[in-house]
Amino acid sequence: MELLAGDIGGTKTLLLRARWRDGQPQVLAEKRFDSAAYADLADMVREFLAGACAPVAACLAVAGPVQPAPGGGTQARITNLPWQLDSRRLAQTLGIGRLHLINDLAAVGYGLDLLAPSDLVELQAGQVQTGSLRAVLGIGTGLGMALVAPAAGSGRVFPSEAGHMDFAPQDARQVQLREFVRQRLGGGRVSCERLVSGSGLALHYEFLGGDAVSPDTVAARAVAGDALAGEAMTLFATVCGAAIGNLTLTCLPFGGLYLAGGVVQKNLSLFGDSVFLGAVRDKGRMAAVVRQVPIYAITEPRIGLLGAARYATLEHADV
Image 1 (cartoon, rainbow, N blue to C red):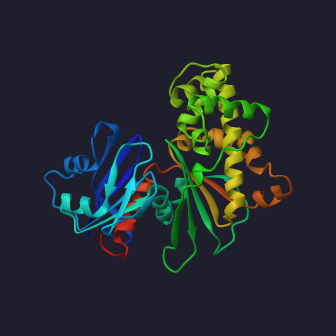
Image 2 (cartoon, rainbow, N blue to C red):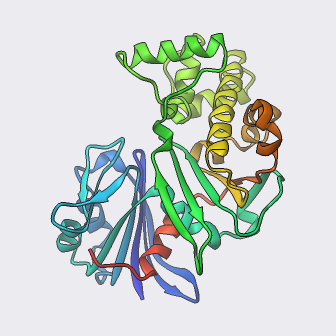
């Protein structure tokens, strides 16, 4: 079975053409695209598939909520891109018989069982409880979350928009941080995603007096010994840890909490540090409960793409 899988994010899009055999994708072609360089997704996919046979099925994982479309199928608005996607329209445009849109963190959930032990870094041992809920958190351009409920076969994955919950400051400096971000955004509420994300890391640095640079630059400066960048990384780790600890209490994923996304993969030492884990566990009377949750970092950068490929093989209603 030949299929198309995509992991569409606000910064980059990964596309994969593969054959599915023995529970694994056999890659035929794969390419990374700059998402903002294309007016719409269809143009990008057509370029990728040029000269190849149309796949039998496709699954595109998108950074944003996926909802039923008025005429059938599903639709999605990419959170950090001006793209409005419709599964039926895309299928007709691209000549694909069966095309699905799913949330990008749901795709990570579907990809969990495709990971090898070497694709994971244990951050907190915890106590794995067989048959319990698992959760995935993605820290990249934005902040996403999905839940993986135990079920026969691969389990059931439920996406969420938990990253858009209100940011809750933990001390006076974080109150000042929230007000700084509020002003930068022109007033109104400040969500967790504004701070627990790549752009959030850059805002931490600016809040402390740094110049407007990319999150990669902040991290590189910290590694090079820049004191202000190091302080920004520490504050970022504290804010991330507190938010992740809150989400852990919300769903109690004793089957494992998995951290994905470019920010995690590029800064593994930060997420294994005592500052981050201390903030995760700083939950008062519930601290002992949080300590029981196994926490892992996913180092496989294509996890969403692999999960989308797997979803394309499952039995679902057509577009």
